Picture: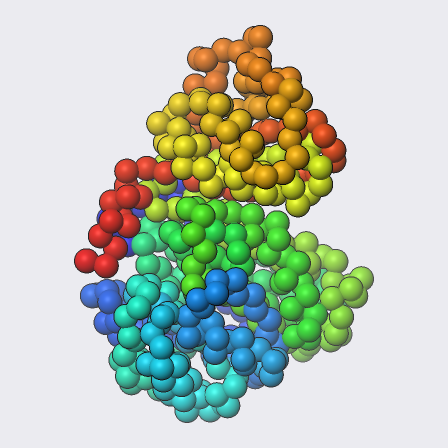
Amino acid sequence: MSGSVSPLAPKTFTAMPALRGVRMTTASAGIKYKNRTDVLLMVFDKPAAVAGVFTRSKCPSAPVDFCRRNLAHGSARAVVVNSGNANAFTGLKGRQATELTAKSAAAAVGCGENEVYLASTGVIGEPLDATKFAGVLDTMAKDATSDFWFEAAKAIMTTDTYPKVATRTAEIGGVKVTINGIAKGAGMIAPDMATMLSFVVTDADISSAALQTLLSEGVGPSFNSMTVDSDTSTSDTLMLFATGAAAADGQAHIDRADDPKLAGFKAALNELLKDLAIQVVRDGEGATKMLEITVTGAENDAAAKRIALSIANSPLVKTAAAGEDANWGRVVMAVGKAGEMADRDKLAIWFGDVRVAVNGERDASYSEDAASNVMKQQDIPVKVDLGLGNGRATVWTCDLTKEYVAINGDYRS
């Protein structure tokens, strides 16, 4: 964690309600950080339905492999998360660490090892000494409480400067349900499933299969539309759990994602996922600006997304934002290299409400002062219209500063 909080941090944090059916606690196991919590345990008192999406990295961490195997069982009783060590690229030792952790958690909670889910974040390539938190899980299982979301979000931070929390409510067949979520992620964040680590829990009564469909669809316009530095983590994990506690209020069990009764829930879930994803971008390592990049008029939505990501991931665009330089030529460059259909002479570009370029050249009424004023804002909207079709997409990114280099230049030391 860097010493100062991101200038883009929320001014106030959402008050997180307790959520029936799940309890949490944290502990300090000294995995990497001194004098701070680094282990989170979530306990579901009854088996919860579970869904997950994970990194598309071809070098995934041992916990990602472990979770993928357990998802087939569709039931969760415990989640163990640690920060400070990613348990990635750790070979046989990594698998042994996940097995020991799962065994300890299953014994502490009183469940099967196939009902345990694990996630780790931090340094890659360092063996994880699972005995460090195997010893604390028994006490943690007893101490876990339902009103613990904010502390839980703190425990999973690495270089994050603030905890990321979000909550929403919805109705299913007239019965009110709650959705709570936490996330972490500040660097090595690119849109290829999730955001390093994020855990979302609802008290709704929904099947694992329906949850999986909702989650897989929900990541597209949220977590898979944000990028800090174009690097996809080995550990990206986003999990959604449903405790089913709302059944006691008369909520009828939902089996299918296309059930019309889920419309309000789906909208609330998608809103929460977008909220968490944007909080991650706003805490990008060293970030001082957030850019919302909207591409319209592309050949199709997929092309619009690729062009938007080409702009968002360009170090030249990101450093121009850091220097408050309205260098729209760099946006032209990023559109041109994206590999998608583009016609130079139909291109238009806006920084905020200021149109800087149109029909393939600088706007005749272009004002450097007006464009520079937009770049001085913390939130910079960039819009590109290709004038070719109906494809559109929005992605979020942050600027690239000297601080990003400083944080990542000595991450392991």
